[in-house]
Length: 342
Image 1: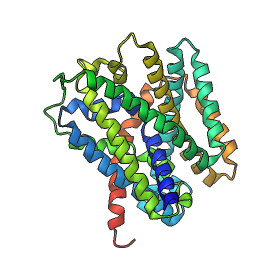
Image 2: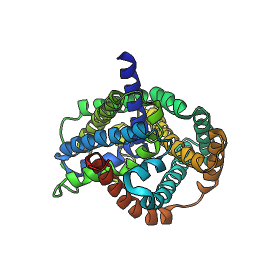
Image 3: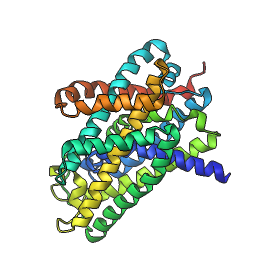
């Protein structure tokens, strides 16, 4: 039982690592999807985390039941071969373009502290490759180490701010809108990355109990971090003007804390790109029988030159497509267990 619990916690930490990217850790996603809707945003976070837990368990259950090796196999089970082929290409683009953005984000993070952009990209490339050499186990181990650190630091920063600031600012830009559609959209936003990772976990899972523990653990702790961030951001004046809202919670004279938060954001980038490239590696292995090591190197080498290109046009074209893709995928996933033919 203890082993099952520990495995479930490790799975939960992997789920958190896939989700808690730079957008989440910086507070930007929390502001856009929740805080900007006002004090009722709390219920939105609860709704989102409930759907998130169910979705995570369903993906892992499908991978466990059918012993899948990559996300394409799960897509075939969910929607048949024809639609799976269409979605396969879009998901591959999503994971690949997302990896490019994360590598560029690492370069930009190092630039802020007077290092070169290429140095920041190179450090991330080496760190990603070293973990992916060990496959799923490497990903699980790294998330088991990094995620507790990330969560602790974010909660500490938000707790300190909430303790010294008791009143809400009252500056909400969407308080007249309902938050629940945004909650569903936010959950859907994370489906592709979760699919990329959890679809490879089935052969590592030993029981359904592990999946349930992992899904609930991830949702609870993501929910706690999101709620802490949400409460803090509701108290910040003109928070919408901050590119990285998390920095608005730290006094400018606390240099050490600013450095610490910068490290947190880099690690959030790191865990996200690890999950993305992990999903890509396992998908490529289905077509070409190369080692994970070789495929990882090829993908990383392909990504690095593209970090120097502006991606505004790419994002403008692809993100609306991804929005529809994610919502459809979430709907199909949630309805799958109720299909009588399965």
